[in-house]
Every structure is written in structure tokens, then in C-alpha cells.
Length: 356
Image (cartoon, rainbow, N blue to C red; front, side):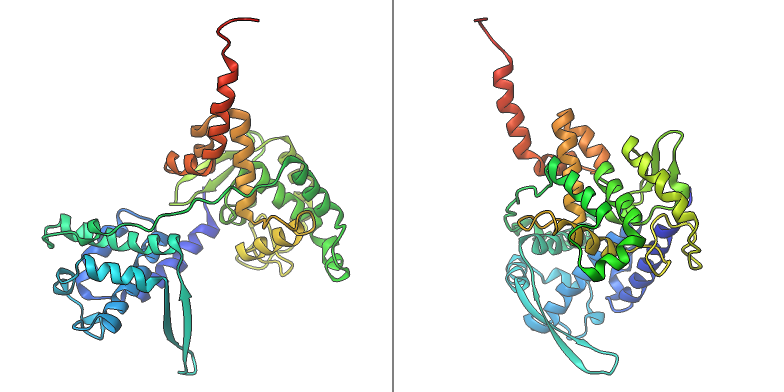
């Protein structure tokens, strides 16, 4: 199965990664080869960006390090201890970075990192130091002495069944939209209904949804062929409601003469290009704001809505993890811990020792 969108995305990421590597120390080439064989291009890019932030901090704020990170060697790694890392963690909570614009003007950008952002940046360093420690380049791994920030789990924000019905009804009717929005709605209502129905009915990620091509739909067996996070190909099965809306939408989609490079895309923008992630985020926000002003609904919250309903119906956390594409069931378990607690409470009522 050819995944045109994802192949293009991987190519863009690879090009950006190559450019970023040019500014990194030469000694890291072995580490880059190791990452290339173990993690996806997107993860490689994320790790490299975060490691560059750390090296830039060392060059600008720690002293006694080269001011050009390109000149860093393994010797610099050997000098890093837990005290430096802890100071870096403190720095990450708020810092200012300077960027040169196309007009060679410097722009200062303030950056805030909360617990999750700091933890992610530490993960990149743990990967780096673990590699060189295992390769016996380093005598110790200082990241083992640094604690991750305590992550405060957020309650799952999701739509209730009646809100799901209201959302779909609102997308179909356009009730509540402004006059300007109504002008476009008559052209996009069927597309928007199909797209949101797919998200709500499968739990797929928004990036997976916009990456769908028409040939990725198998009506005979009732599934989408999807390229998941990390590059894994998987079949995501759909029910009658999705099949019904797709049969309504596809004839309209086939009538659109998409621009070159977008001919196979399932969901197109008004400009006849493949719909992007940001556009879907704005779409969901627009419609969801008409049915709830309390909950901040995003495509990811639609995914949580699906996961919640699936877990409530099945009680099988492993099934939820598999369908949502979580590589680690503990990720799923953390998200649905409150629901698991509710199920355990119900279990106490199931078993009767003495019949009344």
C-alpha cells in the first residue's frame, strides 16, 4: 500500500533533519546512525532539536564551553554532571532564544516549558548519554541522577454521547454558524461530516486521517489502511455509520479535480489540496464551540471520546491500546485510570455471597 502523504511528510522531515545535523558537532554522527536504525524520522528530528537546545545552553550560559556548538567534542560530554543538568532543567522553565530573520534581523522569542515539555527534552538527553555510556565512551551517565518533573495527569476531556449527536447534527445543518461561515458550509458540510465521523468512529489521529487516500478504503472488509505513528501500517476497521457517510461523500469527492500531487487525497480543502492538520483543528474548534463552551474540544479529544466509549463497552484496556495505536499499554492505562477505578468499584457489586 502506497502512503503518498506520509512519504512526503517523511521526506520533508528528512530534509529538515539533514539541515539541522549540519549545525551539530561532528562527534554525534555515530549517534545519528544509531537513531536512524532505532526511531522514526520525526523522533530523530525532535531529539536533535532538543539536544541542540541543550548544547546552545551550555555554550551561552554555562561558561568554559565552546561558544560554537559545532566545536563540541566528547570531552564536553564528559564534563557534564548532574549539577549542570539540574541547572538546565531550571533554565528550561523559561528562556529567550534569538533567531535571525530573512532580513538578517534578530528576533527574541520567549519560551515556556511546563512539566511535559521539560520531561521530553530530558528524554532526548537520556537517549544521548545512554548511547555513549553503553558504547563505553563515557564512564558514567549523569542523566540517571536527574529526576523527571512530576507529571500531573489531566482529566480526560471528552464528549458525552448526547454531545456527539449534537456535534454531528450541527455539522450537517450548520445551525449557529455565522453568515460568512454559512457561505462555505454548503460546500463543505458533507466533507466535514464525513471527516468528523471518521475521527469519532475510529479514534485515529488527525495526522492519520488527513493522510488517507481514497484507495486506502476497503469497503468489502470494512477497514482503512493507515500508516500509524512510528511508520507502522495497520488496518482500522469501521462500522455502518462511517460506511454510510463515505458512500454519500465519495461521489462528491470524485467530482473535484484536485491539484497535482493531491489527486488521491480523501479529504480536500477549498483550494483543492489535501486538507492539513491545522485546518482540521480549526474545523473541530468551530463546530464544537457551538455545542459546548466549557470543554475545549480538539481532534485529540475526539480520539479520547472514542477511546472512552470503547473502554466502557469492552472493559478491555488492551483492545483500546491496540485500536488507538499505543505501543505501550501503560500509556492507555494512565489515560483511562479513572474509568478502570469505576469498573473495579462495580465489580464489588457483581458477586453476592448470600442470596437474599
